[in-house]
Length: 194
Length: 262
Image (tube, rainbow over all chains, first blue to last red; front, top):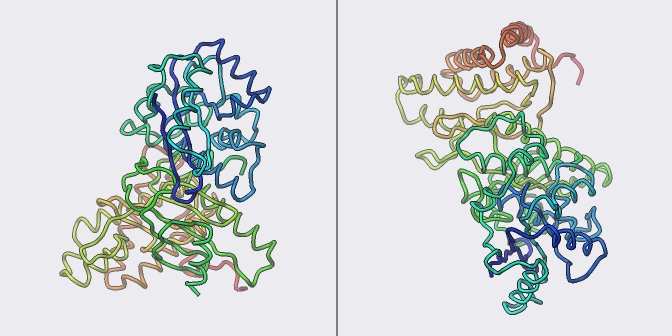
């Protein structure tokens, strides 16, 4: 059982739940995809594959902006979950964003994100939520890992990541490349479609 | 005036403590110790951040005002993103709220012994006031000026114009110069625009550091040349350099404005 909860100073009314699962079966991933399309409420999470996630900062930046857009009524996507995926993307098409950042059979590692109202959440509910996810994704508890920058850097597919964010010609020095890629990815997604 | 604007921005950024750093005609700059979404970001300085806020102007039509604020904020973020992609030292963007004209960015620079921020201006002034004449013209000052020139050269080689080059818009961090404030930045390949950019800096140095301005300007131009001659740009660099310097001489004679109108 390893989930993380985050709070943004600007939005104390929301608590964000983040949990990472490694080695999810292909069939399960397909089911998740279908259930998401069908709108099954048990699957009401923002599921991300890890191939394009370079760091926590990149992920959090997108969640932060999704909540900001939600609060100010500027959302482009229909739901907050999709808005988080969309805000990660450097391309101004929601379908493209879902394709590259959403559930993908080729990547067995999954991050689940969900935004809760802080007042509706206590530690028991959160444990319950995480347990449900473990069951839904048909994984053992040991496959539910604590999300860290080190782990994300291990699971990211740098070649794919660079291609998606068009960073092949960027000048990146070898020292702290995770940090530099994070910065460029955040800037790119901030400027999506502008 | 400032109080009203601070009230406006606190409405957009609840629970964020703000400290006013500077105020211009177009924007207010704040410093804060709170990061919007993560405690340990990938930044050198992860204890302080800068917020630049473009307030709405009551004298403009609300629709035009909204579009101007949005477009200028986008323009500035774009410019900064492009710089970091090119590896030119400038603050990186943390977050942006285009509608409200807010940009969060990295806090650069360090503190001088007298507590001021380490901009080129403050550093040179500090030396001028507290140290001897030799110290003001020492090798590290020369090196810093050269590096600033080189940085501007690199900027211009990528057809980017800063638009407001002054010694206070250049920060020094461990002897490395960095550019800030891209509110007036634009893109142009014309030698004219680059020459005007250089001329603005030359005049700024002349008026803020008048005692040694000759030396400083000379060193800046030396660095500017070196920036163009770097192997990265090949033969093209030299050609562009000659064009810009020739134009600079014209601009010096006539001033910044091309026409006598306005």
